[in-house]
Length: 250
Image 1: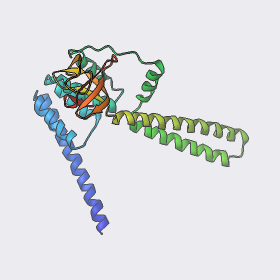
Image 2 (image 1 turned 45 degrees about the horizontal axis):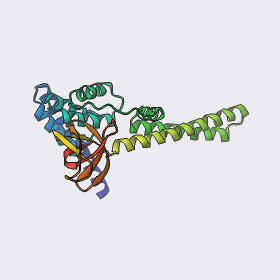
Image 3 (image 1 turned 45 degrees about the vertical axis):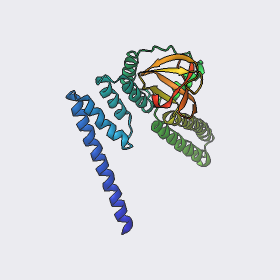
Image 4 (image 1 turned 30 degrees about the horizontal axis):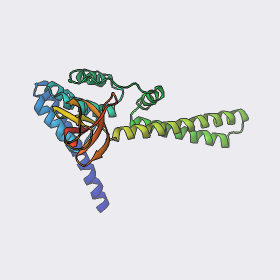
């Protein structure tokens, strides 16, 4: 009886939580349509603070921040959405548009071609899609293994064996790309500069030499941490130290 009660309580709680999410999303969407962008952003933020994440949530937050002329926050949320929906064309367009509005124009160092190809393959599917593909291919390889064991005709056994091997290899590849995609979603080494402007230092202290200045909205890669300081690298390869409080991790 106790188990039944707990199960029912979990089901009811889950349903109520989903209902609250839908209600908050609808209210935020209505506020957005009424040009109440600050209040819409606040409602979206309450959902994010509750632990609920989705590409649509971050995309809508980015739109609300953009309409509210908060460019750095718009870039942050578009970047978070892109990790969950790497092939969303509308998201890519909005992100590129928003990046064009920041002060610093950083020219990225070209990647090696095989790294670019690997990232493109990784981003073909989301983590969930890679997982489902891996499961499907694994089931297919098991079925082919059963076919190889129980089929009597030699040509059918050969087909089952070949298809099974290919399915297993593709399953292994899907697992690998799914793992890479999951690692990319959970990485904490990318951040957006949130300070209006910050002077990067040659060492993690105020006495370090001034290297260059970054303005809000620039994406950086965190390469090291010492106390309240972070060593960051920008897309053109330049490095320097800045305070962690001036960054917001993607």
